[in-house]
Image (cartoon, rainbow, N blue to C red; front, top):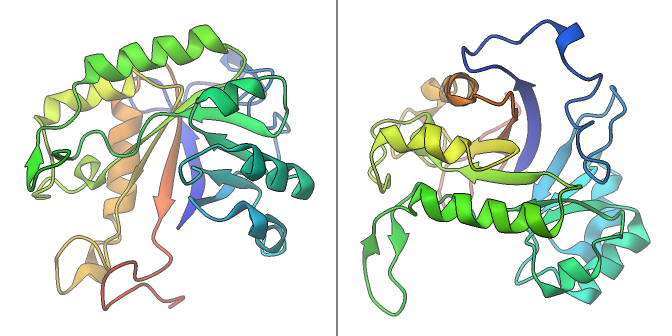
Length: 238
């Protein structure tokens, strides 16, 4: 799965005039993503840092998420390859608060989905946006020099998704709890439709929704479907 930037917007979903904004969407964060106007983040999700150099060879310039990390070894592997990362703000991460390899901090993935109940079968409600706001405040207090990134689930675009864990009215509240907002939807392999290839427009719909819900002009990113994931069907270059 590849992450890509799709733009930023004001609350009305229309990009403001460029003279009202910094040259880069990321200029507000001294230790955040690159501020070169030519920078376009292309990332992989929860991959092995030891493979970072191989990913660089195909154009990847960012890691997002580290399995049970970050750990010292993961950060060392990324540093050796010069591959920046957005990761959880744990003890190891904060020990590297002055390390340029970390480009940002992240919330846990897909808080808008119904959440697995620890130690039990079944699912409970989505994460309360108020809890995310508290996490955001904690992360920003510990390090205001980097953005916080949030990835939401396919309910952003797919209103029929049975896995949504709360009311749709929660989405603007989720968007308020982050500096960079993202979502994932996998039309071919992940929306439980036999003709999912006819729903590729869900990607654009989700981007429009996030732009509309944004009141702070946050950059909007999207997780692009590139494999079949857990399905028998998957996207192709065609």
